[in-house]
Length: 73
Image (cartoon, rainbow, N blue to C red; front, side, top):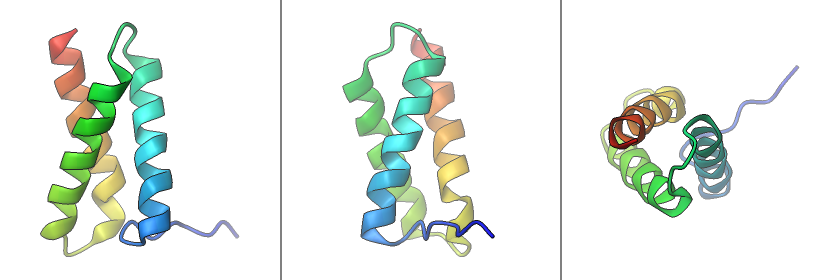
């Protein structure tokens, strides 16, 4: 059984945010990794504040930031 990460746990948040940043940087060639990391940080924390079900935060963050990065490309 695979243990899922708790999106609200500080240690897990760091790992999740790094994973989202890496995935988007690989998907969008020529993108600025530091800019992506900042967008992921802001979006993740914004979503976490109002989350009823925090399990969905990583995928929502990834989708939102990916769209913003692709729009800039």
